[in-house]
Length: 250
Image 1 (tube, helix red, strand yellow):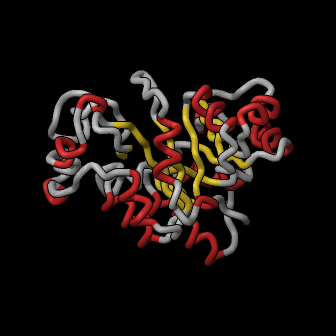
Image 2 (cartoon, one colour):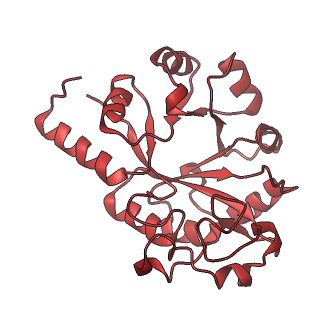
């Protein structure tokens, strides 16, 4: 049995506040194959790692990311909402996460560009990545496929993924147009036939967000390449047990 790779969704939301350095550190310590994170741009121009364009859900601040400078964001707690033991966690910059990971695992960088639009964010991204030594361990994705097309036309050599919440018609042609070698579909919309079609088109299939044991087992049965999950520890435990007994009954 070949198991999919394990990607910690936002660093693994079941063990730490999402998109924080402590979550990514835990992913490293567990031995995850990769992490998935979300990027927005703040008022002072830095790329920061946070899912929502609004501060209210995952910090003790209010307002939009785009209207706050990095020093203002750094004064906020990005972990107190989750548990008081994480109250000192701050919103990390993309550069801080790159420094922490330093090529030890794959980073799936999802660029958030809607509903708030960050004009020219592709240039900001390339500026941050310019001196990163492990570009071959990056996957760039976004629901904004126009952003993906612009990035592709810049001939960066970065690994690109088509991010979608539904099965795409003519997936092979669409992915080729965007320069993508990966497809990141929503697990709830995925079928075994769609995975086979994507593999036949030469695409790597990494699905989100898969959190239940039954679905993990089906993902392995369907030859999914990677599982993006909120519970990487639970998935790793299942894989370790399966490898020990070497037999899984589906």
